[in-house]
Amino acid sequence: MIILITGGSGSGKSALAESLVPRLAAGRRIYLATMAAGDRESLQRIGRHRRQRASLGMVTAERSCDLDGLEVPEDALVLLEDVPNWLAGEMFGGGDEARMLPALRNLAGRCRHLLLVTGDVFRDGGQYDAETESYLEALAAVNREAGALADAVCEAVCGIPVMLKGKLP
View 1 (cartoon, one colour):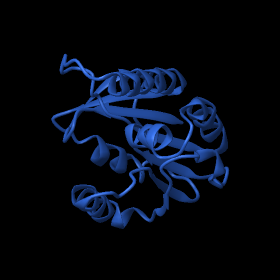
View 2: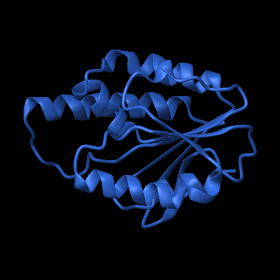
View 3: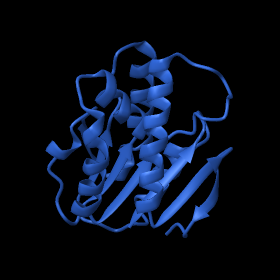
View 4: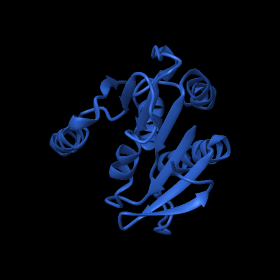
């Protein structure tokens, strides 16, 4: 099963994704952390997420780009946290954004369950420089592909799951 969870900053999307882990009985549980720790704020966020998932029995794999290089057992549940950070790693961290969609399809085909957390950063109506606009366009493309692949798509709104496609387990 592939589940895409989206939402704004602080919407509860990560907690929602983590709450699904025990419901999706699988073999190995892999938390695919894509944030490159670069500053104090990111280190604090990483620490908070580690504490949140401490009881889930997950093995953490830290990878901000090149997800095709990750070994994933067929019976695994993979929680990818999160798509925007993965894109940032591919675009600005020495990766290659062109390999994201093939890697996403490949990852979805290699594991039993894939939980994808992404961000809704498209509603502010602001105008940005060309590099940021390029990032937003690429994120929208990856989100669309993930939504098409997903069995269920859910938006976290104030910690409340709002179903956009399918059903959560």
